[in-house]
Length: 263
Image 1 (cartoon, rainbow, N blue to C red):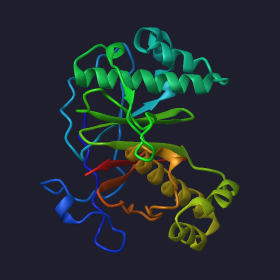
Image 2 (spheres, rainbow, N blue to C red):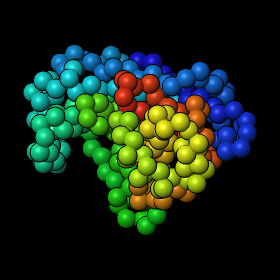
Image 3 (cartoon, rainbow, N blue to C red):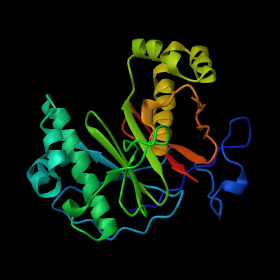
């Protein structure tokens, strides 16, 4: 398992965090998107995982094509009743398979970190930062380990960290979707997209959206918050909101992903 370090944005407007809030020692900037380790399918055991530290998430990529058979075979032994019930609600077999792969993978990773069987892992919803109701981000009861999960068609991304973390993975959208959705972005982000060549806008929008959703998931509010409120940028380096570190994640062509972790 590779321990990953979030890149620090360069100095400048909306560049992210002042040095005083960065972990000590300050990690060096990363030249590009962070890699994510491929998760070995069952029944292969996970090697001993390193301990997590704040602001240094461990990232794992789960490909449905690789894990489909083992996830379906072991789901009843790994997932709880609520997860199994939720999996049956998917109409498309491909979506059900991706859900099973994502949640079996997450339980395997959390179980390995906690030293318990995957099915023994228990989670709850944290209070929502906006209203206080118990529908915030999923958390472990003791709060010593933080995690986030995102999946889209055929791919899942899992992050485990020592401080609140959020991830998002999306397929790069069609151009007409970008035109419709850009109005919900921060005004500066919408202006950046409008200034691009039309052929570049879809990928840039996907960068903005995954960065934004990863950050909002890390906060525990998700899309219940106004996505236009915070600027994360559409360029090569993300602009992290105060108190957070933000990075793109390298994923297969046609997709975009990001991770946000509280500093």
